[in-house]
Image (tube, rainbow, N blue to C red; front, side, top):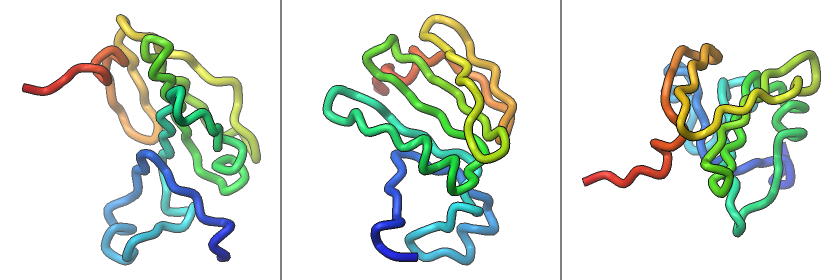
Length: 111
């Protein structure tokens, strides 16, 4: 893999096994979920590259849109149409693992 093939993910979910064998980088086959946080300063969409790499689930989080979490699941070699989960409603997600949250919580501050 060349350095031009590397992608920097905002958030990546990998298996526990992958964390035991990897140093700093993970191969695409080890990534179960890729997450991009999109803001005015970061408008680069990487979904096509994630689909081509075979990453099964991709979340695009649009921070200025409520926030809204757009969930894309791999359908062959491309992602199917996204399912939008808007702030103020609880997103019940099942892939790559069960999780539920209100996207509005992504803007909550701790403490």
